[in-house]
Amino acid sequence: MPEWIETLEALKALDVEVILPGHGAAFEGVAKIGYLQAYLRDLWREASALHAAGVSAPEAAKKIDMTAHAEHFPEISGPGVSEHAVERIYELLDGGS
Image (cartoon, rainbow, N blue to C red; front, side, top):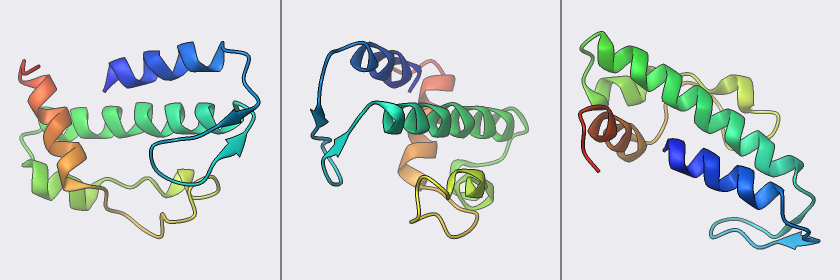
């Protein structure tokens, strides 16, 4: 996941007018990229702390609260994130590639 944040930083440096993401609607400007980077950083931090505390990935996915990002990601309505995303973070934290 840290590589996603770095890749997004490189994307912000490009001179583009419209961005066509793999998911979601096209958008203009790079501000939205920064919002995604902030979300990913917070997700990584939260999942890392729960991993260090020995919380399983499924339980961590239920506990992680990303509602601070709801202003920019309206689909966030309460605690809970993708279990798949947390499993991937745990895999990376455990030395997986």
